[in-house]
Image (tube, rainbow, N blue to C red; front, top):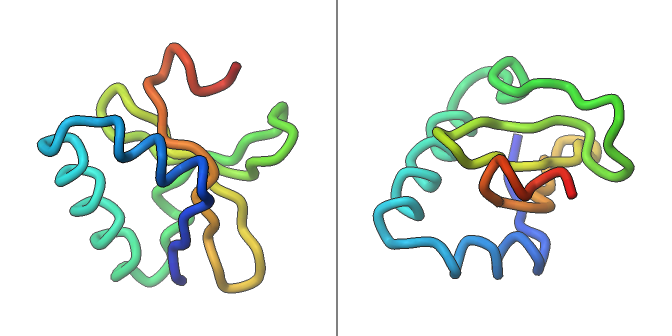
Length: 83
């Protein structure tokens, strides 16, 4: 499965420190190399657009599964991500 970034997710990542960006990049590469990346994700039922979320420390990555693609919609702190 391939990860792609929505424009809003790209802006979210640019606002983070370089250390956090590196951690996110490493986790995404690890999940992408696994046989099924969604095994590491939690399904969402109450969110309008996102279907799953990944957790990286205090940050959450909201994704939407589209075919064989995982579209990253938001990358935010856990207190702000679901608003």
